[in-house]
Amino acid sequence: MLRKLPLRWWIIALITLGTILNYLARSTLSVAAPTLKTEFAMTTEQYSWVVLAFQASYTVMQTVAGAVLDALGTRLGFFLFAVGWALSNMAHAFATGWMSLAFFRSLLGASEAAAIPAGTKTVAQWFPAKERPLATSMFQMGTSVGNMIAPPLVAFCILAWNWQAAFLVTGALSLVWAGMWWVGYRDPAVHPRLSQAERDAIAAMNQPDATKPATKGQVLRSRSFWAIAVPRFLAEPAWQTFNFFIPLYLVAVWKLDLKSIALWAWLPFLAADFGSLAAGLLPPWLMKRGSSMLSSRKITMTLGALCMVGPACIGLATSPEMAIALFCIGGFAHQLLNGALITLCADVFDSRTVGTASGMAGTSAWIGGMLFTLLIGQSADVFGYNPLFVALAGLDLLAAVVLWSLLRART
Image (cartoon, rainbow, N blue to C red):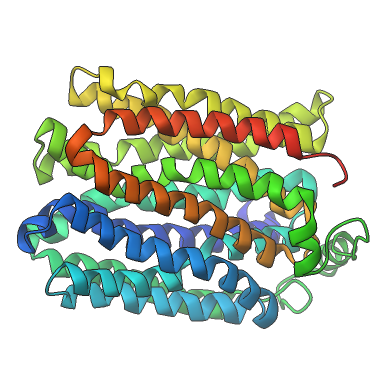
């Protein structure tokens, strides 16, 4: 059965593995954060500056990475970025304080920025519109799987060896994957293992579409771009808060130790996997029942935004188990809505500019995440986390309103 699986599904599986290791690398810090706060005598505000260093470079490089992928091609471009994030993550082991940690973090952010644009560009190059939600959900599942693996793996490395080992191990895994990518990936037009029938189908699918923006300037002037970029700006803070602050929240509010974090902190990302899967299955189901392609994406995104009411209620939790359950609802909700938003880039932009459009939308998203991280750093120790979780739900609901207001069939 596996032999009969079209090559494009093997390609997206390779992208998914790379996304898993990308997010494993970036999540190493959040799990190690309680240990590093003690090691370097860091305050929550100083830790937020470390996180911001990653976010700032990632934000700038999202647009650059998308353009690089469009210019150099997916194979070479993604390989260079993968080697970069692997070595940058391993360099964290040599940090001696929060400022050097922030420096290495900025290098990691710059190099990791290519993951989502590369995945989106691959989906646009290899998959027809009806299969794009599922293909996108597959590589998007890698974001939550990486986060899910991080707590037990990083905690094991710290407890068995030291915190430095956690960064060396997770970085080395990404370096191995970079080699796999270089050996295993080619564009559809030149891939030696692609059947002629599938090659012809992909070539026909990727004929230039005069109705879609085909240059960077056209993308920026397109209403469709802002219909995606603004909701991503509003929605991204939730995912980045889950990524970077769940372990610190569990320590600060519920006084959990590292072993308990390893036991509990991966569960929201398991739930996020189901959200990614739902983002892939729900739009085709809606389309079979009469919904248009764009409406199916918008409905999926809105359902995710409504589910964000769950983590808004974390302040009402009476136990860490209840708090984790509400985080699980949040993880599911965010990946459901984000899957729809990411797929839209492949839907509305020409394959020649998907990487650029996705990268610029990612920059918008990470500006939102960066600003919210700054807010957490300034207010979490003073006012606690509960008002922040309420704000995240409000931002996602506003994102749904913007999406419905701006996105049209031809804009």
